[in-house]
Length: 285
Image (cartoon, rainbow, N blue to C red; front, top):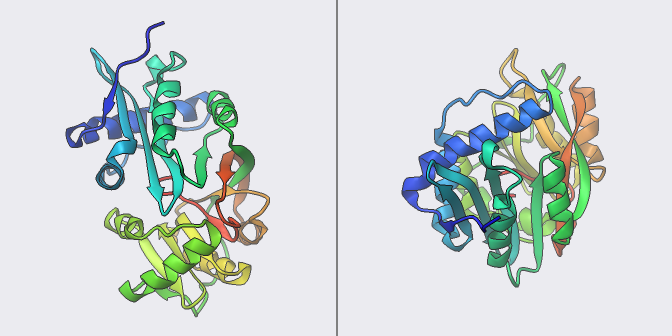
């Protein structure tokens, strides 16, 4: 089978790339006998794609055929830390080598990075590919449901511009690299940022966690409780990427009445810091 046609992602590809991402994720949910997540507002996803295209154009690739885009691969590098932000293939074009070729291009972009992070779906093909690329797989669960009897920590408050310095210090402690402007991009996409002064920060959208990082488990747990307490009444939340190293989060989730579901894996390679207490996010790792 001939190699797929790859080219760099362009800004005018973003709407089609967003549509492809939604289609691929919905297909994955169907294959795992789950109800597909409604598409919703496309703008947060487009903010994500444009942010990474702006900061890491060399890590952004697409495959295409006569019908349009068949795959998208996007990687970023932050302070020597590489991360795979997106790897999706159109459902009717999967298992044909497109994903393998896109992954190779994104990995090449990270040549020389001291560490790497991939948040992997439960798709067996993806898990196999990441293992072959030298990543250690840490199986995860997600905590999903409607929080009950959760009280916000009084110490936690809305994030202020001056808190970027704290966030950078926490990021470097737990993952070896700061997020910097990625946090502003999350806010631009509709997420709320919170901080526990001098100890950590959290990003969420209506109670669904985007990322939580702290210097210690106690502060991380307080941030997670506050996020869950801010969830709209009657709305399910999702706390994902819970490995065995994040017992502080599992304990909070169980106490809040959330159900635990096996998911994919956090895949790590090289120097990624202690990775605790830390819940990474799919967009910026």
